[in-house]
Image (tube, rainbow, N blue to C red; front, side, top):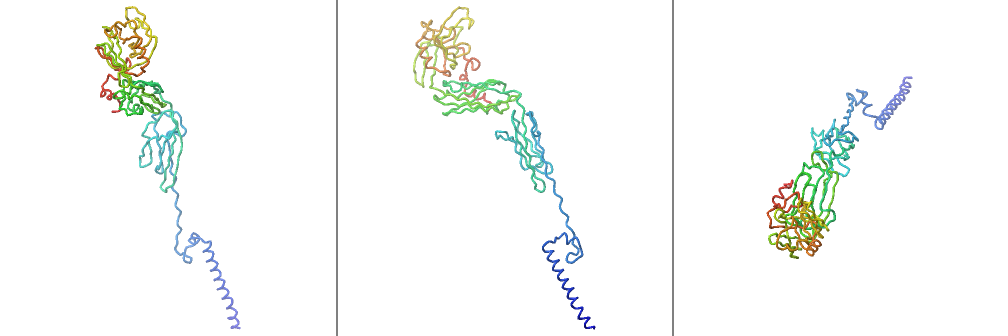
Length: 409
């Protein structure tokens, strides 16, 4: 019986061991295929996990935040407003503030990379787009995009330009730009006035006052030169609230050279065409008390059938005289014109009230061979042509003095 008892218990032991092995194998398969370290660590002291401690998960760093001033979609922003981008909980890695045309507003980063502030002034009536990016300590990226629009200018800087677009002028014609507002920052405006020529020209701008600036070459323009004036005043701050709001382009041509040289001591005028003497004309100039101005003048306009009256100059002597051909050289009334009534004095004496008179044939020829902008150089009197205010006396200033009138030294 005892042998049978030992014999009977052996299979049960073996079965139990087999069951344990099976369980162990099953547990091993489960751990390999689906078990996790967290489940193992949840029962410390069992098997190979004795003494293991659970690892806590890391709390994520909050994303950086970006604030932009002016506010999103803000309108009528004043031009002196502060444009600033600020990052909290991180640092700025990119800030771009651009206009609709792609122009970029300059600025700089400060406060350890957490702020960006514009260093350039805003332009009126302009929409700006702000693109910004920041990262937090974990390298997580945050972006911001918004727009704002500036108010219109307090004053608009308009321009009136001579010569006219597409015109052909003489070699003495200056470029004249007159402004509708006073220009306080002359350098900023002059920098936007760009002259391009088809032939090499040394020239300079000269400011006569806060509203008028002229350009002329060192010597007369080369004949047959194409000239382009780019008035790039859009977005320029002229000061005192005046802003340019548009650009202009003016093109003109310098024609052949026609220079008239009047000598009122010998009462002759010599006309040079492209440097060669083309005609010598007997003339008469202003009598005592009405002397013709000496100096270089420029033809301002061409007129026909001009009526000269004594009332126009305040003369007591009554007269009504019509001139067939007339070339104005001063706004106050000096002309080179037909003077059929004084042919006896032409070539030998001065009898006019300041004009240069000649006979009909010579004035006809001169009128048809002259252009607005042709220079007239007069000598022989003590009265001087003013540099400014009575026509274009620009050529009566030395080149050094002329350049000194530029705002761009």
